Length: 157
Image 1 (spheres, one colour):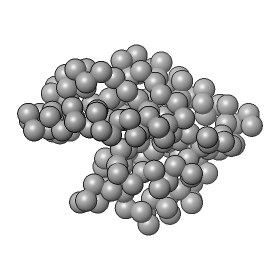
Image 2 (spheres, helix red, strand yellow):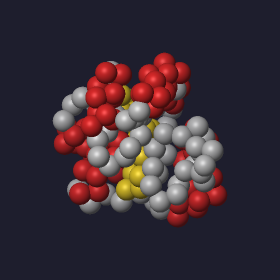
Image 3 (spheres, one colour):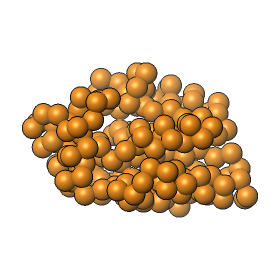
Image 4 (cartoon, one colour):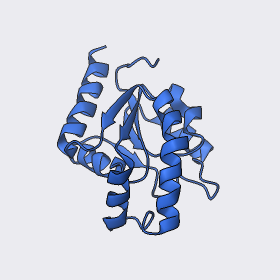
């Protein structure tokens, strides 16, 4: 449903523990401008993106890879050339969040219960809005390669 255009913006989304930050880090290492909305106050206390700030970012940058999963992200889908959903089975996500060091979310039973519920309730909504779904169990370089191919296609248009 989204048209890829030269110098496109891409959103990487998915549940906690799926590897959004890790893939974003790899794309940044490869030279892409990236924004991880889990950091630097992009997400307001109510769990939504700061809409004026996100609107300004998307209006000012002709190319950008953004990651995040928030309730109001769908309001911005028309400003992204592609929405990439990273997904993995719930047991993989629980394992990842329970051992990660960069984010405490997922360490508690309550967090893990919320992740299980979000897989049932939120992930289908993300899937409906995605233009591409990638299996996040694959190696990070391969996932980044797929996203790079998507970017290259947009530059050929």
